[in-house]
Length: 368
Ligand SMILES: *Cc1c(COP(=O)(O)O)cnc(C)c1O
Image (cartoon, helix red, strand yellow):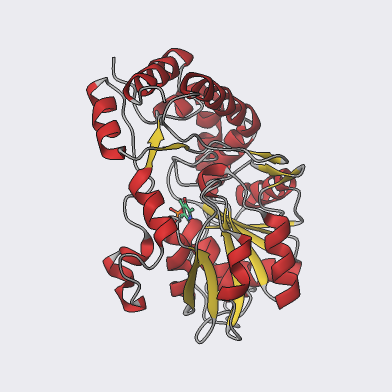
């Protein structure tokens, strides 16, 4: 019996009636770009996050780069990014014309280490992008404190953290602005590409709404050189159906994470943590193992599909050679990339499959 890493079709099958009805409603409306569905989704998702404004955009990468452009951050500016993140966080900074400055994580949480921020800030620094990696919110109080003291914007990369909570508040309302992705594998996934900017700042929301639509607020008037990055009516309608299940589906992830933790306690694997005051969204269940590649092969032999998020850090990708950060430049992140392994996780991972995964991993990573 093979356990797949993630079953996407199950999400459709569980909600088939409602999703098909939403699809028909949009097809019948004859209106496919920037209409009622996007407006409704924006209102509903802002409300879910506990923020005033939401602007639907084409994808998560654009959400982040449009926030930066909306703040006027670009050429000659520096933006602090985590050294261990998906490369999209860095690419958003590059797309805006600014320079990504990596800061190492706290190995206990995989997230940006606030104690290292002050040393990375220069007179050119304009913003900090905090990624809630794997679904765990970053240490936002300390990050916001540094930012306030140094006059910087705090941007959440919440692409992996729909519904994650920090001290009772929801990801998307923990900084000045947040970028979300609705790529199909995310906790709130569309059936294609999609993204959103969430913020309490109506002026920023208006600028992002202008930038996503050719720099135009009123038809045929173009105040700025914008992009074309809009959330489709169809995706918005489908997302509205899935948003109503987000908390319930995150609860299912939580139950599987709890099961993994109980089956893997006492092994040589280092397990993900959930610091006091946080509620992990369990986008990914990531363990650390010194012999990661051997563990991956052994699990494959036992019918368990795993993935590595991520095998090569952004600074060692050919795309970022110009920064001149070679092997050894960011050792905390490099060690994480060598040792992490993501176990199957999702709202449709059955308890039986999760038990099979946990038992196989516990057997391979013999007890300490
Ligand atoms: C998925 C992801 C993105 C990019 O989202 P897209 O919609 O694929 O552009 C950005 N940051 C992180 C951390 C992600 O996981």
